[in-house]
Length: 226
Ligand SMILES: [Mg+2]
Image (cartoon, rainbow, N blue to C red; front, side):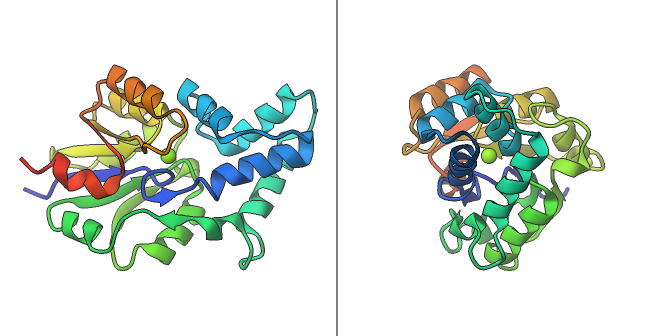
Protein backbone atom coordinates (compact mmCIF):
# COMPACT_ATOMS: atom_id res chain seq x y z
CA UNK A 1 0.00 0.00 0.00
CA UNK A 2 1.28 3.45 -0.86
CA UNK A 3 2.29 5.95 1.76
CA UNK A 4 -0.45 8.21 3.13
CA UNK A 5 -0.81 11.60 1.53
CA UNK A 6 -0.34 14.99 3.17
CA UNK A 7 -2.06 17.68 1.14
CA UNK A 8 -0.74 21.11 2.05
CA UNK A 9 -2.26 24.52 1.64
CA UNK A 10 0.56 26.93 0.82
CA UNK A 11 -0.02 30.35 2.37
CA UNK A 12 0.13 30.41 6.14
CA UNK A 13 1.11 26.72 6.12
CA UNK A 14 4.29 26.19 4.11
CA UNK A 15 4.99 29.88 3.75
CA UNK A 16 4.63 32.80 6.14
CA UNK A 17 2.75 35.41 4.12
CA UNK A 18 2.27 38.11 6.72
CA UNK A 19 4.88 40.25 4.97
CA UNK A 20 3.92 39.19 1.45
CA UNK A 21 0.25 38.52 0.67
CA UNK A 22 -1.20 40.29 3.69
CA UNK A 23 1.09 43.27 3.22
CA UNK A 24 0.07 43.34 -0.45
CA UNK A 25 -3.61 43.47 0.55
CA UNK A 26 -2.87 46.40 2.87
CA UNK A 27 -0.89 48.29 0.21
CA UNK A 28 -3.45 47.64 -2.53
CA UNK A 29 -6.24 48.96 -0.30
CA UNK A 30 -4.14 51.99 0.66
CA UNK A 31 -3.41 52.69 -3.00
CA UNK A 32 -7.03 52.76 -4.15
CA UNK A 33 -8.96 53.74 -1.04
CA UNK A 34 -6.39 55.70 0.94
CA UNK A 35 -7.20 53.84 4.13
CA UNK A 36 -5.15 51.60 6.37
CA UNK A 37 -6.38 48.06 6.87
CA UNK A 38 -4.89 46.25 9.85
CA UNK A 39 -3.72 42.63 10.04
CA UNK A 40 -6.49 42.00 12.55
CA UNK A 41 -9.12 43.28 10.12
CA UNK A 42 -7.72 41.03 7.40
CA UNK A 43 -7.81 38.06 9.78
CA UNK A 44 -11.42 38.89 10.68
CA UNK A 45 -12.36 38.48 7.03
CA UNK A 46 -10.42 35.21 6.81
CA UNK A 47 -12.22 33.92 9.91
CA UNK A 48 -15.61 34.84 8.41
CA UNK A 49 -14.92 32.41 5.58
CA UNK A 50 -15.46 33.08 1.89
CA UNK A 51 -12.46 35.40 1.57
CA UNK A 52 -9.79 32.99 0.48
CA UNK A 53 -9.10 35.00 -2.68
CA UNK A 54 -6.92 37.99 -1.75
CA UNK A 55 -7.78 39.85 -4.97
CA UNK A 56 -11.49 39.62 -4.16
CA UNK A 57 -10.86 40.56 -0.57
CA UNK A 58 -8.81 43.64 -1.53
CA UNK A 59 -11.52 44.70 -3.98
CA UNK A 60 -14.22 44.20 -1.34
CA UNK A 61 -12.43 46.30 1.28
CA UNK A 62 -11.87 49.10 -1.26
CA UNK A 63 -15.56 49.09 -2.23
CA UNK A 64 -16.61 49.11 1.40
CA UNK A 65 -14.53 52.25 1.79
CA UNK A 66 -16.79 53.81 -0.84
CA UNK A 67 -14.38 53.67 -3.78
CA UNK A 68 -15.59 52.15 -7.05
CA UNK A 69 -12.82 50.55 -9.04
CA UNK A 70 -13.00 47.65 -11.50
CA UNK A 71 -11.87 44.29 -10.12
CA UNK A 72 -9.34 43.88 -12.95
CA UNK A 73 -7.51 47.05 -11.93
CA UNK A 74 -7.31 45.93 -8.31
CA UNK A 75 -6.03 42.52 -9.36
CA UNK A 76 -3.51 44.12 -11.74
CA UNK A 77 -2.13 46.41 -9.08
CA UNK A 78 -2.01 43.60 -6.53
CA UNK A 79 -0.08 41.32 -8.87
CA UNK A 80 2.33 44.12 -9.77
CA UNK A 81 3.12 44.67 -6.09
CA UNK A 82 3.26 40.95 -5.37
CA UNK A 83 5.42 39.77 -8.26
CA UNK A 84 7.26 43.05 -8.91
CA UNK A 85 9.85 42.96 -11.65
CA UNK A 86 11.47 39.83 -10.25
CA UNK A 87 13.79 41.69 -7.88
CA UNK A 88 11.47 43.76 -5.71
CA UNK A 89 8.09 41.99 -5.39
CA UNK A 90 6.38 41.24 -2.10
CA UNK A 91 6.72 37.55 -3.02
CA UNK A 92 10.38 37.91 -2.03
CA UNK A 93 9.31 38.62 1.56
CA UNK A 94 7.88 35.16 1.97
CA UNK A 95 9.46 33.00 4.60
CA UNK A 96 9.58 29.20 4.31
CA UNK A 97 8.28 27.89 7.61
CA UNK A 98 9.69 24.37 7.74
CA UNK A 99 12.98 24.06 9.58
CA UNK A 100 15.75 22.20 7.76
CA UNK A 101 15.06 18.47 7.61
CA UNK A 102 11.50 18.56 9.00
CA UNK A 103 9.68 18.01 5.72
CA UNK A 104 12.37 15.63 4.47
CA UNK A 105 11.77 13.48 7.56
CA UNK A 106 7.97 13.54 7.10
CA UNK A 107 8.45 12.67 3.45
CA UNK A 108 9.91 9.31 4.49
CA UNK A 109 6.44 8.35 5.77
CA UNK A 110 4.11 10.49 3.64
CA UNK A 111 3.72 11.61 0.06
CA UNK A 112 3.04 15.33 -0.46
CA UNK A 113 0.55 17.22 -2.60
CA UNK A 114 -0.42 20.91 -2.71
CA UNK A 115 -3.82 22.56 -2.98
CA UNK A 116 -3.64 26.34 -2.94
CA UNK A 117 -5.81 29.31 -3.85
CA UNK A 118 -2.83 30.79 -5.69
CA UNK A 119 -2.33 30.48 -9.41
CA UNK A 120 -0.28 27.30 -9.85
CA UNK A 121 2.56 29.23 -11.53
CA UNK A 122 2.93 31.48 -8.46
CA UNK A 123 2.92 28.43 -6.19
CA UNK A 124 5.58 26.74 -8.29
CA UNK A 125 7.81 29.84 -8.12
CA UNK A 126 7.75 29.55 -4.35
CA UNK A 127 8.33 25.77 -4.35
CA UNK A 128 11.28 26.19 -6.70
CA UNK A 129 12.73 28.77 -4.35
CA UNK A 130 12.36 26.88 -1.09
CA UNK A 131 11.32 23.26 -1.41
CA UNK A 132 14.68 21.81 -2.38
CA UNK A 133 14.18 18.43 -3.95
CA UNK A 134 10.84 17.76 -2.26
CA UNK A 135 8.11 16.59 -4.61
CA UNK A 136 4.55 17.89 -4.30
CA UNK A 137 2.38 15.95 -6.69
CA UNK A 138 -0.03 17.12 -7.84
CA UNK A 139 0.00 20.90 -7.39
CA UNK A 140 -3.56 22.17 -7.77
CA UNK A 141 -4.06 25.94 -7.98
CA UNK A 142 -6.96 28.32 -8.50
CA UNK A 143 -7.31 27.77 -12.25
CA UNK A 144 -7.33 23.97 -12.07
CA UNK A 145 -10.73 23.81 -10.39
CA UNK A 146 -14.26 25.09 -11.03
CA UNK A 147 -15.25 25.98 -7.46
CA UNK A 148 -12.86 27.48 -4.97
CA UNK A 149 -12.53 26.83 -1.23
CA UNK A 150 -14.52 26.17 0.84
CA UNK A 151 -15.81 23.93 -2.00
CA UNK A 152 -14.12 20.52 -1.91
CA UNK A 153 -13.19 20.44 -5.64
CA UNK A 154 -9.43 20.73 -5.26
CA UNK A 155 -9.19 17.97 -2.68
CA UNK A 156 -11.55 15.72 -4.63
CA UNK A 157 -9.44 16.23 -7.73
CA UNK A 158 -6.31 15.21 -5.83
CA UNK A 159 -8.01 12.20 -4.24
CA UNK A 160 -9.41 11.03 -7.57
CA UNK A 161 -7.01 8.34 -8.65
CA UNK A 162 -5.92 7.65 -5.09
CA UNK A 163 -6.59 4.05 -4.16
CA UNK A 164 -7.93 4.31 -0.67
CA UNK A 165 -4.76 5.37 1.14
CA UNK A 166 -5.24 7.83 3.98
CA UNK A 167 -5.01 11.55 3.18
CA UNK A 168 -4.96 14.67 5.34
CA UNK A 169 -5.41 18.34 4.46
CA UNK A 170 -3.31 20.91 6.29
CA UNK A 171 -4.63 24.47 6.20
CA UNK A 172 -4.71 27.73 8.12
CA UNK A 173 -8.21 29.12 7.55
CA UNK A 174 -11.78 28.15 8.28
CA UNK A 175 -12.35 27.83 4.51
CA UNK A 176 -9.62 25.18 4.42
CA UNK A 177 -11.33 23.32 7.28
CA UNK A 178 -14.73 23.45 5.57
CA UNK A 179 -13.19 22.33 2.29
CA UNK A 180 -11.66 19.31 4.04
CA UNK A 181 -14.89 18.50 5.80
CA UNK A 182 -16.91 18.49 2.58
CA UNK A 183 -14.26 16.29 0.94
CA UNK A 184 -14.31 13.99 4.01
CA UNK A 185 -10.58 14.44 4.51
CA UNK A 186 -9.28 14.83 8.08
CA UNK A 187 -8.18 18.43 8.63
CA UNK A 188 -5.07 19.57 10.45
CA UNK A 189 -5.37 23.23 11.39
CA UNK A 190 -2.42 25.57 11.63
CA UNK A 191 -3.09 28.30 14.18
CA UNK A 192 -0.03 30.42 14.81
CA UNK A 193 0.02 31.95 18.30
CA UNK A 194 1.18 35.17 16.60
CA UNK A 195 -2.11 35.32 14.70
CA UNK A 196 -4.05 38.41 15.89
CA UNK A 197 -7.20 36.28 16.32
CA UNK A 198 -5.49 33.08 17.45
CA UNK A 199 -8.13 31.78 19.88
CA UNK A 200 -11.02 32.55 17.56
CA UNK A 201 -9.26 30.51 14.90
CA UNK A 202 -8.69 27.58 17.26
CA UNK A 203 -12.40 27.58 18.18
CA UNK A 204 -13.39 27.74 14.52
CA UNK A 205 -11.19 24.74 13.74
CA UNK A 206 -12.66 22.84 16.68
CA UNK A 207 -16.17 23.65 15.49
CA UNK A 208 -15.22 22.13 12.11
CA UNK A 209 -14.06 18.95 13.88
CA UNK A 210 -10.37 19.37 13.14
CA UNK A 211 -8.37 16.16 13.47
CA UNK A 212 -5.54 18.15 15.09
CA UNK A 213 -4.46 21.76 15.60
CA UNK A 214 -0.79 22.76 15.74
CA UNK A 215 1.18 26.02 15.93
CA UNK A 216 3.03 25.41 12.69
CA UNK A 217 4.10 22.60 10.38
CA UNK A 218 7.24 21.92 12.38
CA UNK A 219 4.95 20.18 14.90
CA UNK A 220 3.25 17.94 12.34
CA UNK A 221 5.30 14.88 13.22
CA UNK A 222 3.82 15.01 16.75
CA UNK A 223 0.35 14.61 15.27
CA UNK A 224 1.45 11.29 13.79
CA UNK A 225 3.73 10.24 16.62
CA UNK A 226 1.49 7.49 18.01
MG1 LIG B 1 -3.71 29.53 3.62
